[in-house]
Length: 189
Image (cartoon, rainbow, N blue to C red):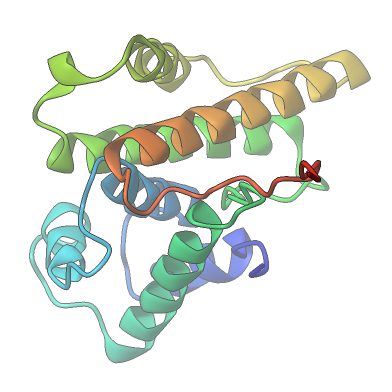
């Protein structure tokens, strides 16, 4: 399985090129496009990202290389049999406020990316619809002020909930690509 996307490196690289989003929002958009049903072979997704994030101005080559790696890693994680999607968020050492804001931006990016490739939401399962409703509520959350263990635990649960919703969307909207769970208890005849 590929490594977790690095929020700081991605955010710093975006800032170096005056792109007004951070690593969480970018990764959310990429994940949303993939989970919304965009073909994994689609090569137009970079143009879509430049339209949405950089006023249709082309990204510099170094940024394109980084984003393509992030895209490939995300595809590998989404199709991993162990459901290995790792969200590109501020590290656990960051303040809870920064972690919470990162999650909110990731979800907002996901909703944008998902919406670009999923016009038939009414045809989706109740699980996907409910998950997207949860995402809508998360995207409107206030920043986290409490910096205690209970809040940290709640945030970790919320991150896991978001991860599961994203995987659910991917498995439904990319049925030919979905990760197949490993049978850990094979039947012997």
